[in-house]
Amino acid sequence: MRLLFAVLLIAATVSGQTTCPECPEPGSNSCLLWPEACEQCYEDCVSDVPPPRRMSPTGPSRQPGVDYVLPKSIGIHSLNYKSNEFQSWSDNSIIIHDDGFTTQELWIDIPPYCAGHWEQPFPSNLWVQDEYGCDFEWIVKHGPSRILFLRIGVVSWMVNEGQGCYIMDKAPLGFIVNRLYDMAWYRDITVILTPWEQDWYAQGCPATDGFTPEKYLQRLDWLISFESERQRQVEQSRAAKMKQYPGARLQVLHAMVVNKFPGYNIKDKYVGLPTLSEKIGEMTANPLLHEPDLVGISYWKRGFDPVPALDYVKESTKYPKHRLFIAEFGARGDEQPQRYLDYIPVFKEWGMRTILIWVHKDYWNHGGNYTITPAGLDALRELDNDFRRD
Image (cartoon, rainbow, N blue to C red):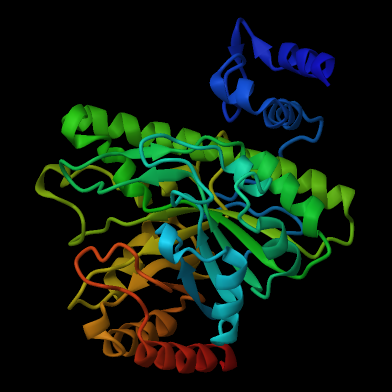
């Protein structure tokens, strides 16, 4: 394997620079601590399966054999945080299913279990290898969820202005896609690899970076290049695994998530600068970039009709409605169930197919406890049943 790694590394290097930007640098701590994952990354990177590219001038491209239409459903976020209340993800998955929901999102990067630390990125590829004992294999091979969102790609803490920063997890998505297909290619489930609210990334670390329009635009451009490469890896690995497993029923998709639109989360100094939604729209017209399979929308605004925001994201990204989803929507305990009853039918009427609700258990209690209450659960269950019957 070490000889193979050396050959692959030579093949993947030009003028001393790696051409596998998703992989950790040779000799880095990641490669020293996790050599097998490092080797696998370079092996995937220089695979002889070409990354498929299908351009459409009016919207996102399509890969043959991939189903981009998510089933109609309401899903529940599952968050594990405090050690004295920790439950395994398999336990949470069963509880959420028993509550009547077949769509679930797992937030991977929550310490002290199944993750790293807030202060530094951690490799999600270790999570999918069960290095942290997080029941990943059981959830993928036997879990009751039909639609499974895996939140990967970011560690973040209090990213609003002047507080903390947004750190990207650069674990190779190709490795994760390969692992998913090898474990459960025969299962009729959909797995979506999704990050958190990515418009925050362009703010950088306000407390240390400061703000200039130039820095903001540079971070946006970097994010687009970074996510294009992640999508390329997903397409390449997916094509290879669909060829390896001709009868595969598993669907693995990759998403980006936006959270800024006119009238929401855009402070004065950002007015006139592009949002991530607009930059994703540019991806669909650039044959050198790989736009994500799906785009998620984090919508938390109160007291306003959400339709203009949804229309803005659709028009800016150039994505059809069936390739958009609500990545986060929630309500404080004192707002439940009315906030669900007010907004979810609007999302549904607009054409949104999948809506993810924050949260099964709120361990943070920032600005109010968002744990789904019994009354909220009853309302969500009824809304989900109506949603799926339509």
